[in-house]
Length: 171
Image (cartoon, rainbow, N blue to C red; front, side):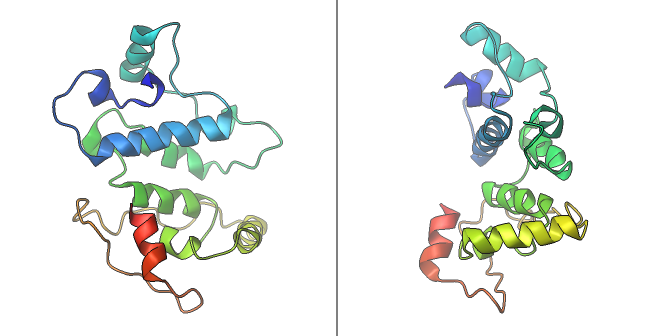
């Protein structure tokens, strides 16, 4: 669908890399949060032009007023939707980590994959009550090698990682 194409795809670039997927994931997350795609138009060419030239409004200003969208999520989505691939979030894993940290979660997506939804909701509510939303670093610990097939493990004492969960999240 053209709604999720990266700018380099919209321009018909011959070589694409994983950063086009980061853009698509950012567009999907934007739509899930706001209820509308970040770039729209009356037809295919208009959608592609919007992708190349427009910047969508921040998710925190566009979401349902009853929804809980931390302002820190604006930067996470903006970084994923960067027009230039080299300015974009380095990997989908780094995007997932930044997304969770915007909600005040510690650790990373590999840890959260093994945590129950109820526990994640509790941790987010706790972070929200303590005013810790978006306070943690969202830098990509794997930026030195964004093409690495498997990032180095980041074990947490309270959440052991299984090989199958790590493999599923890396894909």
